[in-house]
Length: 614
Image 1: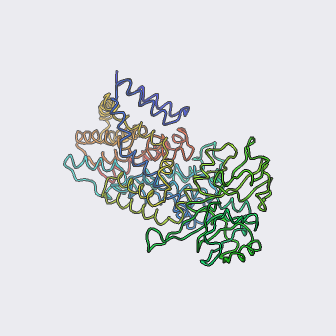
Image 2 (image 1 turned 30 degrees about the horizontal axis):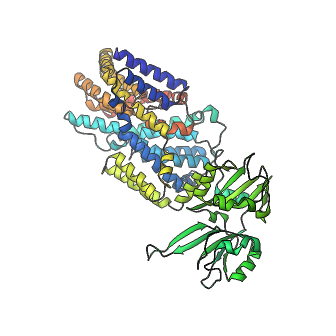
Image 3 (image 1 turned 45 degrees about the vertical axis):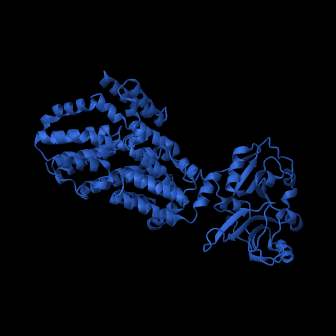
Protein backbone atom coordinates (compact mmCIF):
# COMPACT_ATOMS: atom_id res chain seq x y z
CA UNK A 1 0.00 0.00 0.00
CA UNK A 2 2.81 2.42 0.93
CA UNK A 3 4.48 1.63 -2.38
CA UNK A 4 1.38 2.57 -4.39
CA UNK A 5 0.87 5.71 -2.33
CA UNK A 6 4.49 6.77 -2.85
CA UNK A 7 4.38 6.42 -6.61
CA UNK A 8 0.93 8.01 -6.68
CA UNK A 9 2.12 11.08 -4.76
CA UNK A 10 5.22 11.24 -6.94
CA UNK A 11 3.11 11.08 -10.11
CA UNK A 12 0.72 13.81 -8.95
CA UNK A 13 3.67 15.98 -7.94
CA UNK A 14 5.21 15.60 -11.38
CA UNK A 15 1.92 16.52 -13.07
CA UNK A 16 1.52 19.62 -10.89
CA UNK A 17 5.07 20.67 -11.67
CA UNK A 18 4.44 20.24 -15.39
CA UNK A 19 1.13 22.14 -15.47
CA UNK A 20 2.67 25.08 -13.60
CA UNK A 21 -0.73 25.98 -12.11
CA UNK A 22 0.68 26.19 -8.59
CA UNK A 23 4.00 27.64 -7.52
CA UNK A 24 6.76 25.04 -7.41
CA UNK A 25 7.48 25.58 -3.70
CA UNK A 26 3.80 25.09 -2.81
CA UNK A 27 3.71 21.85 -4.82
CA UNK A 28 6.78 20.59 -2.97
CA UNK A 29 5.24 21.41 0.43
CA UNK A 30 1.97 19.69 -0.56
CA UNK A 31 3.91 16.57 -1.57
CA UNK A 32 5.78 16.63 1.72
CA UNK A 33 2.52 16.92 3.66
CA UNK A 34 1.04 14.04 1.67
CA UNK A 35 3.93 11.76 2.62
CA UNK A 36 3.52 12.69 6.31
CA UNK A 37 -0.28 12.34 6.38
CA UNK A 38 -0.10 8.91 4.75
CA UNK A 39 2.50 7.78 7.28
CA UNK A 40 5.22 7.16 4.71
CA UNK A 41 7.36 9.82 6.38
CA UNK A 42 7.58 10.59 10.07
CA UNK A 43 7.41 14.31 10.97
CA UNK A 44 11.09 14.26 11.96
CA UNK A 45 12.01 12.75 8.58
CA UNK A 46 9.95 15.38 6.77
CA UNK A 47 11.93 18.15 8.45
CA UNK A 48 15.37 16.79 7.57
CA UNK A 49 15.45 18.81 4.37
CA UNK A 50 15.18 22.07 6.28
CA UNK A 51 18.25 21.18 8.35
CA UNK A 52 20.21 19.85 5.38
CA UNK A 53 23.58 21.52 4.90
CA UNK A 54 22.83 22.07 1.19
CA UNK A 55 19.81 24.24 2.04
CA UNK A 56 21.81 26.25 4.58
CA UNK A 57 24.63 26.65 2.07
CA UNK A 58 22.27 27.93 -0.62
CA UNK A 59 20.81 30.54 1.73
CA UNK A 60 24.32 31.71 2.58
CA UNK A 61 25.29 31.86 -1.07
CA UNK A 62 22.40 34.22 -1.81
CA UNK A 63 23.93 36.62 0.71
CA UNK A 64 27.42 36.20 -0.74
CA UNK A 65 26.01 36.83 -4.22
CA UNK A 66 24.28 39.97 -2.96
CA UNK A 67 27.59 41.29 -1.64
CA UNK A 68 29.23 40.67 -4.99
CA UNK A 69 26.44 42.54 -6.75
CA UNK A 70 26.09 45.38 -4.22
CA UNK A 71 29.78 46.29 -4.20
CA UNK A 72 30.00 46.46 -7.98
CA UNK A 73 32.31 43.43 -8.20
CA UNK A 74 29.85 41.70 -10.52
CA UNK A 75 29.76 44.75 -12.79
CA UNK A 76 33.56 44.95 -12.83
CA UNK A 77 33.89 41.27 -13.72
CA UNK A 78 31.23 41.68 -16.39
CA UNK A 79 33.04 44.67 -17.89
CA UNK A 80 36.25 42.67 -18.17
CA UNK A 81 34.41 39.80 -19.80
CA UNK A 82 32.59 42.09 -22.24
CA UNK A 83 35.87 43.79 -23.14
CA UNK A 84 37.48 40.46 -24.06
CA UNK A 85 34.39 39.30 -25.93
CA UNK A 86 34.15 42.51 -27.94
CA UNK A 87 30.81 43.28 -29.55
CA UNK A 88 30.01 39.65 -30.35
CA UNK A 89 27.21 38.17 -28.24
CA UNK A 90 28.08 34.71 -29.58
CA UNK A 91 31.68 34.99 -28.38
CA UNK A 92 30.47 36.35 -25.05
CA UNK A 93 28.05 33.43 -24.65
CA UNK A 94 30.75 30.80 -25.20
CA UNK A 95 33.36 32.62 -23.11
CA UNK A 96 30.92 32.97 -20.23
CA UNK A 97 30.09 29.27 -20.24
CA UNK A 98 33.77 28.30 -20.28
CA UNK A 99 34.47 30.56 -17.30
CA UNK A 100 31.54 29.02 -15.43
CA UNK A 101 32.94 25.55 -16.16
CA UNK A 102 36.38 26.55 -14.86
CA UNK A 103 35.00 28.08 -11.66
CA UNK A 104 32.70 25.11 -11.12
CA UNK A 105 35.61 22.68 -11.29
CA UNK A 106 36.86 23.87 -7.91
CA UNK A 107 33.64 24.43 -5.99
CA UNK A 108 30.10 23.08 -5.88
CA UNK A 109 27.87 23.70 -8.86
CA UNK A 110 25.36 25.34 -6.52
CA UNK A 111 28.03 27.74 -5.26
CA UNK A 112 29.14 28.44 -8.81
CA UNK A 113 25.65 29.40 -9.96
CA UNK A 114 24.94 31.53 -6.88
CA UNK A 115 28.20 33.42 -7.34
CA UNK A 116 27.96 33.79 -11.10
CA UNK A 117 24.27 34.76 -11.27
CA UNK A 118 24.78 38.43 -10.38
CA UNK A 119 27.68 38.64 -12.82
CA UNK A 120 25.63 37.06 -15.62
CA UNK A 121 22.62 39.30 -14.97
CA UNK A 122 24.89 42.35 -14.87
CA UNK A 123 26.47 41.40 -18.20
CA UNK A 124 23.09 40.77 -19.85
CA UNK A 125 21.78 44.15 -18.71
CA UNK A 126 24.94 45.95 -19.85
CA UNK A 127 24.60 44.59 -23.41
CA UNK A 128 20.80 45.08 -23.50
CA UNK A 129 20.09 41.35 -23.67
CA UNK A 130 17.60 39.24 -21.74
CA UNK A 131 19.24 37.49 -18.76
CA UNK A 132 17.05 34.44 -19.46
CA UNK A 133 19.24 33.63 -22.47
CA UNK A 134 22.20 33.12 -20.14
CA UNK A 135 20.78 31.79 -16.86
CA UNK A 136 19.63 28.32 -17.96
CA UNK A 137 22.96 27.62 -19.75
CA UNK A 138 24.68 28.83 -16.58
CA UNK A 139 22.89 26.14 -14.57
CA UNK A 140 23.50 23.38 -17.13
CA UNK A 141 27.20 24.08 -17.57
CA UNK A 142 27.62 24.30 -13.79
CA UNK A 143 26.17 20.77 -13.61
CA UNK A 144 28.67 19.59 -16.22
CA UNK A 145 31.50 21.26 -14.31
CA UNK A 146 30.65 19.00 -11.38
CA UNK A 147 32.39 16.22 -13.34
CA UNK A 148 35.67 18.06 -13.80
CA UNK A 149 37.24 17.34 -10.38
CA UNK A 150 36.59 15.11 -7.40
CA UNK A 151 35.38 17.94 -5.13
CA UNK A 152 33.17 19.66 -7.70
CA UNK A 153 30.07 17.58 -6.95
CA UNK A 154 28.79 15.55 -3.98
CA UNK A 155 28.04 12.44 -6.12
CA UNK A 156 31.74 12.24 -6.99
CA UNK A 157 32.64 12.14 -3.31
CA UNK A 158 29.87 9.63 -2.56
CA UNK A 159 30.98 7.09 -5.18
CA UNK A 160 34.64 7.61 -4.25
CA UNK A 161 33.90 6.84 -0.59
CA UNK A 162 31.85 3.77 -1.55
CA UNK A 163 34.84 2.44 -3.49
CA UNK A 164 37.01 2.85 -0.38
CA UNK A 165 34.39 1.17 1.80
CA UNK A 166 34.47 -1.83 -0.51
CA UNK A 167 38.26 -2.15 -0.54
CA UNK A 168 39.08 -0.22 -3.75
CA UNK A 169 41.26 2.85 -4.28
CA UNK A 170 39.43 6.15 -4.03
CA UNK A 171 39.09 8.36 -7.10
CA UNK A 172 41.97 10.80 -7.54
CA UNK A 173 41.36 14.55 -7.80
CA UNK A 174 41.41 14.64 -11.62
CA UNK A 175 40.49 11.01 -12.43
CA UNK A 176 37.00 11.95 -13.59
CA UNK A 177 38.17 15.08 -15.46
CA UNK A 178 38.17 13.54 -19.00
CA UNK A 179 34.47 12.71 -18.60
CA UNK A 180 33.80 16.26 -17.44
CA UNK A 181 35.68 17.80 -20.36
CA UNK A 182 33.58 15.78 -22.80
CA UNK A 183 30.40 16.86 -21.03
CA UNK A 184 31.36 20.55 -21.04
CA UNK A 185 32.31 20.44 -24.73
CA UNK A 186 29.04 18.79 -25.77
CA UNK A 187 27.03 21.08 -23.49
CA UNK A 188 28.58 24.29 -24.81
CA UNK A 189 28.04 23.27 -28.44
CA UNK A 190 24.42 22.23 -27.80
CA UNK A 191 23.55 25.37 -25.84
CA UNK A 192 25.25 27.58 -28.44
CA UNK A 193 22.87 26.37 -31.14
CA UNK A 194 19.85 26.37 -28.80
CA UNK A 195 20.48 29.76 -27.20
CA UNK A 196 17.69 31.59 -29.06
CA UNK A 197 15.11 28.99 -27.97
CA UNK A 198 16.07 29.20 -24.29
CA UNK A 199 14.28 32.47 -23.54
CA UNK A 200 10.68 31.82 -22.37
CA UNK A 201 8.07 32.94 -24.92
CA UNK A 202 6.59 35.63 -22.71
CA UNK A 203 10.00 37.25 -22.21
CA UNK A 204 11.48 37.19 -25.70
CA UNK A 205 10.87 40.86 -26.33
CA UNK A 206 12.02 41.92 -22.86
CA UNK A 207 15.38 43.55 -22.41
CA UNK A 208 17.57 43.25 -19.40
CA UNK A 209 17.18 46.84 -18.37
CA UNK A 210 13.46 47.39 -18.68
CA UNK A 211 12.75 46.96 -14.99
CA UNK A 212 15.70 48.87 -13.67
CA UNK A 213 14.65 51.67 -11.29
CA UNK A 214 16.13 55.11 -11.70
CA UNK A 215 19.43 55.40 -9.87
CA UNK A 216 20.21 58.44 -7.68
CA UNK A 217 22.73 59.52 -10.32
CA UNK A 218 20.08 59.43 -13.04
CA UNK A 219 17.61 61.29 -10.82
CA UNK A 220 20.15 64.06 -10.23
CA UNK A 221 20.63 64.31 -13.99
CA UNK A 222 16.90 64.37 -14.70
CA UNK A 223 16.36 67.17 -12.19
CA UNK A 224 19.30 69.10 -13.64
CA UNK A 225 21.14 69.39 -10.36
CA UNK A 226 24.48 69.35 -12.12
CA UNK A 227 26.28 72.67 -11.71
CA UNK A 228 24.03 73.71 -8.82
CA UNK A 229 25.87 71.91 -6.04
CA UNK A 230 28.76 73.62 -4.29
CA UNK A 231 31.17 72.43 -1.64
CA UNK A 232 32.02 75.15 0.88
CA UNK A 233 34.48 74.79 3.75
CA UNK A 234 34.02 76.47 7.14
CA UNK A 235 37.43 77.78 8.41
CA UNK A 236 38.16 77.85 12.12
CA UNK A 237 37.87 81.66 12.26
CA UNK A 238 34.51 81.78 10.42
CA UNK A 239 31.66 83.51 12.25
CA UNK A 240 29.48 80.57 11.19
CA UNK A 241 31.20 78.24 13.68
CA UNK A 242 28.94 77.30 16.57
CA UNK A 243 25.75 78.65 15.02
CA UNK A 244 22.54 76.68 14.50
CA UNK A 245 21.14 76.61 10.96
CA UNK A 246 17.65 77.58 12.11
CA UNK A 247 19.07 80.90 13.35
CA UNK A 248 20.80 81.74 10.07
CA UNK A 249 17.74 81.66 7.74
CA UNK A 250 20.03 80.98 4.78
CA UNK A 251 17.25 80.01 2.30
CA UNK A 252 15.40 83.30 2.89
CA UNK A 253 18.46 85.57 2.95
CA UNK A 254 20.66 83.99 0.28
CA UNK A 255 18.16 81.90 -1.78
CA UNK A 256 20.28 78.81 -1.16
CA UNK A 257 19.89 75.61 0.83
CA UNK A 258 22.48 73.64 2.80
CA UNK A 259 21.78 69.97 2.07
CA UNK A 260 24.57 68.01 3.70
CA UNK A 261 27.34 68.49 6.24
CA UNK A 262 30.51 66.46 6.03
CA UNK A 263 32.66 66.43 9.15
CA UNK A 264 35.89 64.76 10.20
CA UNK A 265 36.03 63.68 13.82
CA UNK A 266 38.93 62.49 15.95
CA UNK A 267 36.62 60.89 18.49
CA UNK A 268 36.99 57.19 19.19
CA UNK A 269 40.24 56.08 17.59
CA UNK A 270 42.66 58.98 18.01
CA UNK A 271 45.02 58.07 15.19
CA UNK A 272 42.27 57.34 12.66
CA UNK A 273 40.03 60.33 11.90
CA UNK A 274 36.55 59.31 10.80
CA UNK A 275 34.36 61.14 8.29
CA UNK A 276 30.71 61.60 9.23
CA UNK A 277 27.90 62.89 7.06
CA UNK A 278 24.55 64.23 8.18
CA UNK A 279 21.60 65.86 6.53
CA UNK A 280 21.57 69.58 7.23
CA UNK A 281 18.51 70.38 9.31
CA UNK A 282 17.24 73.28 11.46
CA UNK A 283 18.96 71.83 14.55
CA UNK A 284 22.33 71.28 12.86
CA UNK A 285 25.21 73.20 14.48
CA UNK A 286 28.15 74.22 12.28
CA UNK A 287 31.63 73.25 13.44
CA UNK A 288 35.08 74.36 12.28
CA UNK A 289 36.41 72.61 9.14
CA UNK A 290 32.94 71.33 8.16
CA UNK A 291 32.31 70.85 4.45
CA UNK A 292 28.88 72.18 3.49
CA UNK A 293 27.09 70.89 0.41
CA UNK A 294 25.04 73.86 -0.79
CA UNK A 295 22.39 73.93 -3.51
CA UNK A 296 22.80 77.04 -5.64
CA UNK A 297 25.15 78.78 -8.03
CA UNK A 298 28.51 80.43 -7.42
CA UNK A 299 27.01 83.88 -7.95
CA UNK A 300 24.37 83.18 -5.31
CA UNK A 301 27.04 81.90 -2.93
CA UNK A 302 29.25 85.02 -3.15
CA UNK A 303 27.32 86.90 -0.44
CA UNK A 304 27.21 83.84 1.82
CA UNK A 305 30.94 83.23 1.48
CA UNK A 306 31.83 86.89 1.99
CA UNK A 307 29.60 87.43 5.02
CA UNK A 308 30.78 84.39 6.99
CA UNK A 309 34.38 84.10 5.77
CA UNK A 310 33.91 80.75 4.02
CA UNK A 311 36.01 79.02 1.35
CA UNK A 312 34.65 77.70 -1.94
CA UNK A 313 36.09 74.18 -2.36
CA UNK A 314 34.32 73.08 -5.53
CA UNK A 315 31.84 74.70 -7.87
CA UNK A 316 29.44 72.52 -9.86
CA UNK A 317 30.17 69.42 -7.78
CA UNK A 318 28.60 66.19 -9.03
CA UNK A 319 25.13 65.77 -7.58
CA UNK A 320 25.86 62.10 -6.87
CA UNK A 321 28.02 63.33 -3.97
CA UNK A 322 24.73 63.78 -2.15
CA UNK A 323 24.55 59.99 -2.06
CA UNK A 324 26.55 58.12 0.57
CA UNK A 325 26.22 55.22 2.96
CA UNK A 326 24.10 57.35 5.26
CA UNK A 327 22.36 59.79 2.90
CA UNK A 328 20.58 59.53 -0.41
CA UNK A 329 18.04 61.03 -2.77
CA UNK A 330 14.74 59.68 -4.07
CA UNK A 331 11.81 60.75 -6.21
CA UNK A 332 8.29 60.90 -4.75
CA UNK A 333 4.90 61.51 -6.38
CA UNK A 334 1.94 63.26 -4.78
CA UNK A 335 -1.08 60.97 -4.45
CA UNK A 336 -4.51 62.19 -5.72
CA UNK A 337 -5.77 62.78 -2.18
CA UNK A 338 -2.52 64.07 -0.70
CA UNK A 339 -2.84 66.66 2.05
CA UNK A 340 0.15 68.46 0.52
CA UNK A 341 -1.69 69.54 -2.64
CA UNK A 342 -2.22 73.32 -2.94
CA UNK A 343 0.10 74.02 -0.02
CA UNK A 344 3.51 75.65 -0.26
CA UNK A 345 6.59 73.81 0.94
CA UNK A 346 7.25 76.28 3.76
CA UNK A 347 3.80 75.82 5.30
CA UNK A 348 3.80 72.01 5.23
CA UNK A 349 7.11 71.94 7.16
CA UNK A 350 8.26 68.98 5.09
CA UNK A 351 11.77 68.92 6.56
CA UNK A 352 10.54 69.05 10.15
CA UNK A 353 7.85 66.41 9.53
CA UNK A 354 9.77 63.87 7.47
CA UNK A 355 13.41 64.86 8.19
CA UNK A 356 13.96 65.27 4.44
CA UNK A 357 14.86 68.19 2.19
CA UNK A 358 12.95 68.90 -1.02
CA UNK A 359 15.67 69.79 -3.50
CA UNK A 360 13.72 69.74 -6.75
CA UNK A 361 10.22 69.81 -8.23
CA UNK A 362 9.28 68.33 -11.58
CA UNK A 363 6.05 69.84 -12.91
CA UNK A 364 4.94 68.51 -16.30
CA UNK A 365 8.53 67.93 -17.34
CA UNK A 366 9.79 71.31 -16.15
CA UNK A 367 12.29 71.42 -13.29
CA UNK A 368 11.60 74.06 -10.63
CA UNK A 369 14.71 74.67 -8.53
CA UNK A 370 14.43 78.33 -7.55
CA UNK A 371 12.54 79.66 -4.53
CA UNK A 372 10.95 76.28 -3.97
CA UNK A 373 9.87 77.13 -0.43
CA UNK A 374 7.30 79.58 -1.83
CA UNK A 375 5.81 77.28 -4.47
CA UNK A 376 2.46 75.56 -4.01
CA UNK A 377 2.44 71.85 -4.72
CA UNK A 378 0.02 70.47 -7.30
CA UNK A 379 -1.29 67.03 -8.11
CA UNK A 380 1.05 65.43 -10.63
CA UNK A 381 4.16 67.07 -9.18
CA UNK A 382 7.11 64.81 -8.51
CA UNK A 383 9.51 65.87 -5.79
CA UNK A 384 13.19 65.07 -5.41
CA UNK A 385 13.92 64.59 -1.72
CA UNK A 386 17.23 64.25 0.08
CA UNK A 387 18.10 62.92 3.51
CA UNK A 388 19.02 59.77 5.38
CA UNK A 389 18.11 56.45 3.78
CA UNK A 390 16.21 55.55 6.94
CA UNK A 391 14.04 58.65 6.58
CA UNK A 392 13.40 57.90 2.91
CA UNK A 393 12.37 54.33 3.72
CA UNK A 394 10.19 55.56 6.59
CA UNK A 395 8.46 57.98 4.22
CA UNK A 396 7.76 55.11 1.84
CA UNK A 397 6.08 53.11 4.60
CA UNK A 398 4.24 55.59 6.76
CA UNK A 399 2.53 58.24 4.66
CA UNK A 400 -0.36 58.22 2.20
CA UNK A 401 0.46 61.68 0.90
CA UNK A 402 3.30 60.59 -1.39
CA UNK A 403 4.50 57.46 -3.18
CA UNK A 404 8.19 56.65 -3.49
CA UNK A 405 9.30 55.92 -7.06
CA UNK A 406 11.78 53.07 -7.45
CA UNK A 407 13.49 51.05 -4.73
CA UNK A 408 15.21 53.20 -2.10
CA UNK A 409 16.24 50.12 -0.11
CA UNK A 410 18.12 48.81 -3.13
CA UNK A 411 19.88 52.12 -3.69
CA UNK A 412 20.71 52.39 0.01
CA UNK A 413 22.31 48.96 -0.07
CA UNK A 414 24.37 49.81 -3.14
CA UNK A 415 25.48 53.11 -1.61
CA UNK A 416 26.44 51.35 1.62
CA UNK A 417 28.66 48.88 -0.24
CA UNK A 418 30.19 51.41 -2.62
CA UNK A 419 33.98 51.14 -2.89
CA UNK A 420 34.12 47.70 -1.29
CA UNK A 421 34.50 45.56 -4.40
CA UNK A 422 37.99 44.48 -3.32
CA UNK A 423 36.57 43.42 0.07
CA UNK A 424 33.88 41.30 -1.60
CA UNK A 425 36.51 39.83 -3.93
CA UNK A 426 38.74 38.91 -0.99
CA UNK A 427 35.83 37.28 0.84
CA UNK A 428 34.88 35.29 -2.25
CA UNK A 429 38.50 34.17 -2.70
CA UNK A 430 38.63 33.11 0.94
CA UNK A 431 35.44 31.11 0.55
CA UNK A 432 36.67 29.33 -2.59
CA UNK A 433 40.01 28.57 -0.92
CA UNK A 434 38.30 27.10 2.14
CA UNK A 435 36.07 24.96 -0.07
CA UNK A 436 38.97 23.69 -2.19
CA UNK A 437 41.17 22.88 0.80
CA UNK A 438 38.21 21.45 2.72
CA UNK A 439 39.34 23.11 5.94
CA UNK A 440 35.69 23.22 6.98
CA UNK A 441 32.56 21.59 5.59
CA UNK A 442 31.35 23.49 2.51
CA UNK A 443 28.33 25.05 4.23
CA UNK A 444 30.52 26.38 7.06
CA UNK A 445 32.83 28.04 4.50
CA UNK A 446 29.81 29.67 2.86
CA UNK A 447 28.38 30.86 6.19
CA UNK A 448 31.76 32.40 7.09
CA UNK A 449 31.71 34.31 3.80
CA UNK A 450 28.08 35.39 4.29
CA UNK A 451 28.77 36.72 7.80
CA UNK A 452 31.87 38.57 6.59
CA UNK A 453 29.83 40.19 3.82
CA UNK A 454 27.49 41.62 6.47
CA UNK A 455 30.18 42.60 8.99
CA UNK A 456 32.24 44.45 6.36
CA UNK A 457 29.23 46.33 4.96
CA UNK A 458 29.24 44.61 1.57
CA UNK A 459 25.67 43.71 2.50
CA UNK A 460 24.01 46.58 4.33
CA UNK A 461 22.51 44.77 7.34
CA UNK A 462 20.70 41.61 8.39
CA UNK A 463 17.39 42.85 6.99
CA UNK A 464 19.05 43.36 3.62
CA UNK A 465 20.67 39.91 3.88
CA UNK A 466 17.35 38.19 4.59
CA UNK A 467 15.76 40.14 1.76
CA UNK A 468 18.28 38.75 -0.74
CA UNK A 469 17.48 35.11 -0.01
CA UNK A 470 15.15 33.55 -2.57
CA UNK A 471 12.86 31.80 -0.13
CA UNK A 472 10.91 30.10 -2.92
CA UNK A 473 14.05 28.19 -3.91
CA UNK A 474 14.92 27.41 -0.29
CA UNK A 475 11.47 25.96 0.51
CA UNK A 476 11.38 24.07 -2.78
CA UNK A 477 14.70 22.32 -2.22
CA UNK A 478 14.13 21.64 1.49
CA UNK A 479 10.70 20.13 0.86
CA UNK A 480 11.92 17.91 -1.98
CA UNK A 481 14.96 16.40 -0.23
CA UNK A 482 12.96 13.98 1.99
CA UNK A 483 11.40 12.41 -1.13
CA UNK A 484 14.38 10.05 -1.35
CA UNK A 485 13.63 8.85 2.18
CA UNK A 486 10.00 8.26 1.20
CA UNK A 487 11.07 6.11 -1.74
CA UNK A 488 13.39 4.11 0.48
CA UNK A 489 10.85 3.70 3.32
CA UNK A 490 8.16 2.44 0.96
CA UNK A 491 10.45 -0.09 -0.72
CA UNK A 492 10.29 1.73 -4.02
CA UNK A 493 14.04 1.84 -4.52
CA UNK A 494 14.50 -1.87 -3.79
CA UNK A 495 11.73 -2.75 -6.22
CA UNK A 496 13.30 -0.63 -8.95
CA UNK A 497 16.82 -2.01 -8.46
CA UNK A 498 15.72 -5.66 -8.46
CA UNK A 499 13.50 -5.15 -11.47
CA UNK A 500 16.29 -3.44 -13.41
CA UNK A 501 18.75 -6.29 -12.89
CA UNK A 502 16.15 -8.91 -13.87
CA UNK A 503 15.08 -6.94 -16.92
CA UNK A 504 18.50 -5.95 -18.26
CA UNK A 505 20.73 -8.73 -16.99
CA UNK A 506 20.34 -10.62 -20.25
CA UNK A 507 21.83 -7.73 -22.22
CA UNK A 508 25.18 -8.08 -20.49
CA UNK A 509 27.28 -5.53 -18.66
CA UNK A 510 26.68 -2.73 -21.18
CA UNK A 511 22.91 -3.17 -20.94
CA UNK A 512 22.95 -3.05 -17.13
CA UNK A 513 25.31 -0.06 -17.24
CA UNK A 514 22.89 1.78 -19.52
CA UNK A 515 19.98 0.88 -17.28
CA UNK A 516 21.74 2.14 -14.16
CA UNK A 517 22.66 5.36 -15.94
CA UNK A 518 19.10 5.93 -17.19
CA UNK A 519 17.46 5.09 -13.87
CA UNK A 520 19.87 7.36 -11.99
CA UNK A 521 19.26 10.15 -14.48
CA UNK A 522 15.45 9.80 -14.39
CA UNK A 523 15.19 9.81 -10.62
CA UNK A 524 17.71 12.62 -10.49
CA UNK A 525 15.11 14.85 -12.12
CA UNK A 526 12.95 14.76 -8.99
CA UNK A 527 15.34 14.29 -6.07
CA UNK A 528 18.72 15.88 -5.41
CA UNK A 529 21.81 14.57 -7.16
CA UNK A 530 23.27 13.82 -3.72
CA UNK A 531 20.27 11.73 -2.69
CA UNK A 532 20.23 10.02 -6.08
CA UNK A 533 23.89 9.06 -5.78
CA UNK A 534 23.41 7.78 -2.23
CA UNK A 535 20.57 5.52 -3.36
CA UNK A 536 21.98 4.22 -6.63
CA UNK A 537 25.70 3.88 -5.86
CA UNK A 538 25.16 0.74 -3.74
CA UNK A 539 22.93 -0.69 -6.48
CA UNK A 540 25.67 -0.06 -9.05
CA UNK A 541 28.34 -1.61 -6.82
CA UNK A 542 26.19 -4.69 -6.24
CA UNK A 543 25.50 -5.04 -9.96
CA UNK A 544 29.20 -4.71 -10.85
CA UNK A 545 30.17 -7.39 -8.30
CA UNK A 546 27.41 -9.72 -9.51
CA UNK A 547 28.53 -9.31 -13.13
CA UNK A 548 32.23 -9.47 -12.15
CA UNK A 549 33.09 -6.24 -13.99
CA UNK A 550 35.00 -3.06 -13.11
CA UNK A 551 33.04 -1.25 -10.35
CA UNK A 552 34.65 2.07 -11.33
CA UNK A 553 32.75 1.97 -14.62
CA UNK A 554 29.38 1.51 -12.94
CA UNK A 555 29.98 4.04 -10.17
CA UNK A 556 31.24 6.67 -12.61
CA UNK A 557 27.98 6.10 -14.52
CA UNK A 558 26.05 6.86 -11.31
CA UNK A 559 28.05 10.05 -10.68
CA UNK A 560 27.50 11.20 -14.28
CA UNK A 561 23.81 10.20 -14.42
CA UNK A 562 23.10 11.99 -11.13
CA UNK A 563 24.62 15.15 -12.57
CA UNK A 564 22.49 15.16 -15.74
CA UNK A 565 19.88 17.30 -13.97
CA UNK A 566 18.36 19.16 -16.88
CA UNK A 567 14.70 18.19 -17.41
CA UNK A 568 12.99 19.71 -14.35
CA UNK A 569 13.49 22.77 -12.15
CA UNK A 570 13.73 20.54 -9.07
CA UNK A 571 16.39 18.28 -10.55
CA UNK A 572 19.16 20.40 -9.11
CA UNK A 573 19.50 23.35 -6.73
CA UNK A 574 21.11 25.22 -9.63
CA UNK A 575 17.92 24.86 -11.69
CA UNK A 576 15.84 26.11 -8.78
CA UNK A 577 18.19 29.08 -8.39
CA UNK A 578 17.76 30.26 -11.98
CA UNK A 579 14.09 29.34 -12.37
CA UNK A 580 12.64 32.46 -10.75
CA UNK A 581 15.36 34.83 -11.95
CA UNK A 582 14.99 33.65 -15.55
CA UNK A 583 11.20 33.42 -15.59
CA UNK A 584 11.33 29.75 -16.65
CA UNK A 585 8.51 27.23 -16.35
CA UNK A 586 8.63 23.45 -15.99
CA UNK A 587 8.09 23.11 -19.75
CA UNK A 588 11.12 25.29 -20.54
CA UNK A 589 13.40 22.89 -18.66
CA UNK A 590 11.86 19.87 -20.35
CA UNK A 591 12.05 21.43 -23.81
CA UNK A 592 15.77 22.22 -23.57
CA UNK A 593 16.87 19.57 -21.09
CA UNK A 594 15.42 16.33 -22.44
CA UNK A 595 17.15 16.51 -25.88
CA UNK A 596 20.41 17.30 -24.08
CA UNK A 597 19.96 14.26 -21.85
CA UNK A 598 19.36 12.00 -24.85
CA UNK A 599 22.52 13.32 -26.51
CA UNK A 600 24.53 12.88 -23.31
CA UNK A 601 23.27 9.31 -22.85
CA UNK A 602 24.60 8.31 -26.25
CA UNK A 603 27.90 10.15 -25.69
CA UNK A 604 28.46 8.76 -22.19
CA UNK A 605 27.64 5.18 -23.13
CA UNK A 606 30.61 5.46 -25.49
CA UNK A 607 32.91 7.57 -23.32
CA UNK A 608 32.54 5.86 -19.91
CA UNK A 609 33.41 2.27 -21.03
CA UNK A 610 36.20 3.72 -23.20
CA UNK A 611 37.85 5.68 -20.38
CA UNK A 612 36.96 3.19 -17.61
CA UNK A 613 37.00 -0.22 -19.35
CA UNK A 614 34.68 -2.93 -18.06
